[in-house]
Amino acid sequence: MRQAWKFAYWPVIWTITLAPPLVLDWGPRLHGLPALFLQALGLVVIAYSLLLTSVAGRTLRLYGHKGDSFWPDKLVDVGVYACMRHPQHLGLALFPVGLSLATAMPVVLLASGWSVAGALAFILLVEEPECLEKYGEDYVAYMRRVPPFSLDPRCLVESLRLIRKD
Image (cartoon, rainbow, N blue to C red; front, side, top):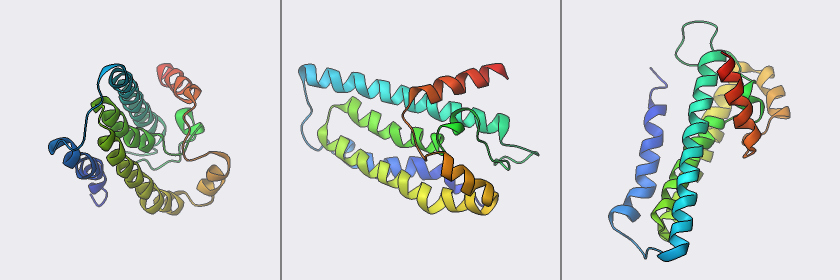
């Protein structure tokens, strides 16, 4: 139960950073072709973020458990985790960026940068130290060969293939 706050972190950080500009309708909205382009790009980023988060979660569920623990107790380095160490957090960080693009409001896009900063802080201050403590030298070796993030679409494709096999 000591890690349950992690579930609340993401909605709270998104609300703190995105609600003021959206609710208070700060700044202008783009119109016409630029707005349509940003909205379409925003929907693509939202879809990618949701798919990445889902694939990462499913990969952890399939390969990250030795016992009955809810939290992974085994280092996962297959599927999307063979391409990046924090795919789920990348997906969660990209979601507000996609949402801000879909609003076609430049100030909301700027505000979403704080959500990304919150995600990076979460990874550096919470996730990496926990993983180092939990997995020790295995995680240090994993850090040496796998970057924290990757936008390479092949990571997602390979992960979907791996999940379909199981």
